[in-house]
Length: 318
Ligand SMILES: Cc1cc2nc3c(=O)[nH]c(=O)nc-3n(C[C@H](O)[C@H](O)[C@H](O)COP(=O)(O)O)c2cc1C
Image 1 (cartoon, protein in one colour):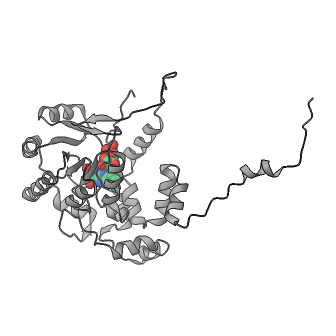
Image 2 (image 1 turned 120 degrees about the horizontal axis):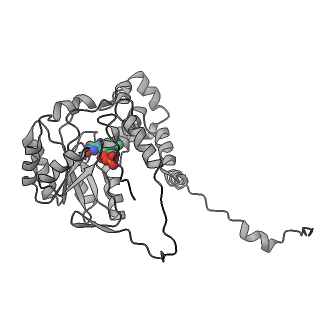
Image 3 (image 1 turned 30 degrees about the vertical axis):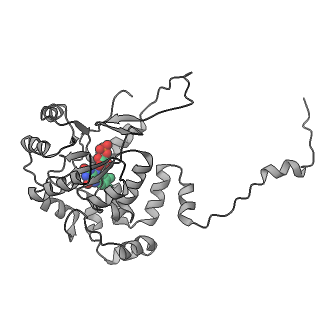
């Protein structure tokens, strides 16, 4: 058997191994550099965000069965890589709804975004601009239509509409979005009433956040969120009036449960750009939506946040 020959380490062999990096004094950059997966980011968010805001973002409706099924379906996806192709240059760009996108996805609309992180929609719109993908602003967004347009001036912005009982006010927002150059209207149709988000109920989640003994204790190790909250614009909806109450009360006071396919046709006639219906969950409904003449559908159960046990939408062949 060959014997291992040993030697004294020589300085010229050691030198390349010694890689002392200059310390980074920016704590945020240090934290983010260590976050390699979405789960790492989740762990950072859980440490730094008050419980009610974190749970509002992460949670879903009722027993969160649809959410768990969606996660499982995502885990179960299998790739079948094709081999021996020249992949030295890869182009993921494509055309969606008459416009370019650098990647085959965009940023979905989220309400209360500045409650999750103080930079909220500004960060989302700036990231979309950098990545060359569309950004969607929710009716329940916390940054104005015009501010989003200014943050992503040369990229694609989409406006997500919730039709309220007060139709004139809903359509005034739609007009503002068209005037600001938003090219697509996402009409969300899966919120006739607020979803039963049990985490929010348990946490007493309200807008603005209320200070109870439990929220104060939870706030102590999360000072940065509170400093941001107290020293930036109040967390009102940039598109709506101020609100004070629970999220479910807000949604129920605003959303119109009488909206029908006829209304969808009318909304279509009011918008100059592309119209996409978000929240289609059955084949029969998909056919009816297509017959109204809209430009696209988003098969979605709202991340399981509306009707628990709603079907998980997954493309069967990738
Ligand atoms: C915190 C949070 C807030 C959301 N707010 C909205 C909203 O205001 N409007 C909307 O249409 N969808 C909203 N959604 C749903 C998302 O746009 C998206 O549909 C969901 O994350 C799941 O993706 P899927 O549509 O592919 O199932 C929200 C989702 C999350 C996680």
